[in-house]
Length: 210
Ligand SMILES: [Zn+2]
Image (tube, rainbow, N blue to C red; front, top):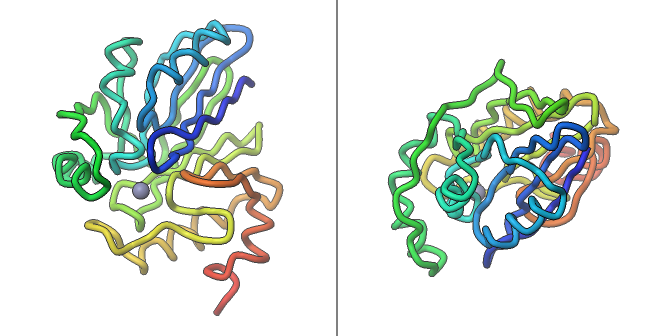
């Protein structure tokens, strides 16, 4: 598995480029910004982007999706419960002081029970509402990797004070879905350092109390 993790944009969103070494098919997850740098990595590995997957519709995760779609022709996939957030990208741009990215179109909604693939590498889609209504995680079971979006961070969890956020829902998603994964699962959060499910189960203050 080719897996490049590139922090993009002013909020340094972890954009993942996942590719199959044999078929050269790839998916890009959360291309929030810096699409030229994303495309340089795609070319470096001689990949063909087949899917653009968005963990949730915050601007730092979705802001570059249309530019990447224009460059690759790949469809943009996002859970439909975040469509409302997608309509307020101008407002989101004002929150963090960046230029509005324009309208982002979604080609297909993703939810639990579906999968996304880059050649032979397939991830289960897990709908994990709480940070936003439409937040999803991607679980690559054979590779023991979880792309967690802003649901889980090393030592913390996603904020729930923005529109569509719910502390009750994120705690339920973490307990019922995320923590049901094996301890040796590597977690790639939406921002910051990588961690594991076991590490967070034992030491994350939001998960150890109660
Ligand atoms: Zn977010």
